[in-house]
Amino acid sequence: MKKRSNCLIISILIIFILLVTGDINRIAKADSINTSSSTEWIQSVNQAMSCFKDKGGYCTSRKIPAGFTQTTWMGMDKAVDVQKNKTIIDVDQARPSFCSSAVYMLFLKSLSIWSTQYNHSISYLSWTNLKPYTMPNEKYPIQQDGEGAWGMANSNGPGFAVLINKLKMGSNYYVGLPLNIHLLMKEFLLLNKAEDVMLLKCFGMIM
Image 1 (tube, one colour):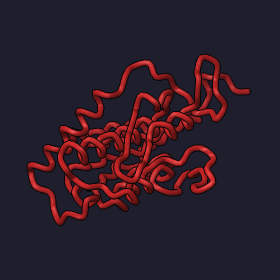
Image 2 (image 1 turned 180 degrees about the horizontal axis):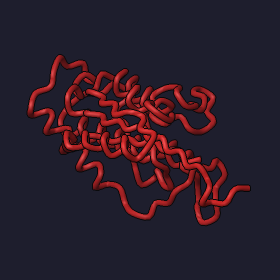
Image 3 (image 1 turned 120 degrees about the horizontal axis):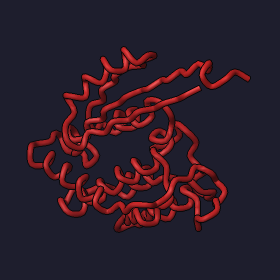
């Protein structure tokens, strides 16, 4: 076994900035977005972020680890209650979490606030499709990476960008695959273009 000092560390970072302020009304079948509705979305995201508490814990296992009462998958299933007349997103139920589960819950909570507080209708079918199916269910099987809305958001690489593209909710900016620190620093200069409520997704792998 090689010493750590001789290990080859390969870092692959895929950076996506998802601009969801540009076309968000498309989910309600509107033709375009004006400045007012962009502001509504920003306010919805900010309000949604304030609903998340600290110290939720980190867990990717499907077995309940020591110190927890449930897995992330259990919590996500409980957190999204899709009903005929309304959909309830209770982010307190979605604890513990991991990177993509937390981002996806923020996405759903923001949509819920945007819909209810600003009178933008999101259909029962849309919520049914957006709900993360993370537990065994007779009607809807567990969504694997790339399957359904949650499966896209959870998949490595461009998953969340693919979801936003399919929903026609905004623009995706692909920064690249920097293979060394020089390229990495060069690509980070694009972050100067970032604006409020843009989502930056970094996928990293160290070997």
